[in-house]
Length: 315
Image: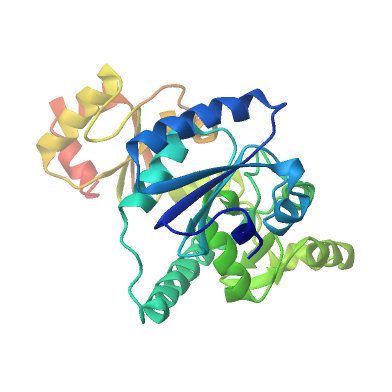
């Protein structure tokens, strides 16, 4: 391991800061490291000028500064890219407090990682493991992949491999695919950018990857998610407007089960449902996929004794 030439692994945890003197954010993070060193005397903190050790920077894929690598027992266990002082502090605390892995437990640790990777791969019908996020890709290949998927209206979730070094390295072995981005559909690896470009050129991409659900179909699905659905500002536990609070109190008093959707968390649904239902305000109450109305209608139905039968689907 190249880093062995630069410092001894004589402590449980070693944190290496790849930095550059011309980057002010690196100077700031050196100050953070100095503070952490006082708090965690059992941890070794090392500063390496990235451009002065190009072979090391290349080996560990140091493409920007600051970057932090975490080592335990001569093994890299984590990574942090960027000047994120709170995250650096959190990672140091976590790794410093965790005990060394007992001998003979590598197999179980590997099994636990594989279980975690399988869950991540199946977290959505279409999962993209990339550098950065769809809004802020952190490499050209990831950016191109996102652009292709968006161009074809493909619905996908993503995982930033920079956020978890264990996943970043483990997935390469798990999938037998050495580079990123990696695209999975229904838990199966499709491939990287080159494969996706080939599928796009052949016209197969649209059949392989799931399309984003149309808004109208999504609204229908939400409205029919439960026999009684309330679209409101906030949720059952915490209403965020007086009208929503009043309608919840009325429905709660009936004893009928119902589910809610917080329209403040999804602007597309918030605006789209107004048009779909031809009802301009919230809250909106639906029973068996049909609009009942807003607060005023619900109050009238309650006064007339009609609300309970309607909520039970008897009318």
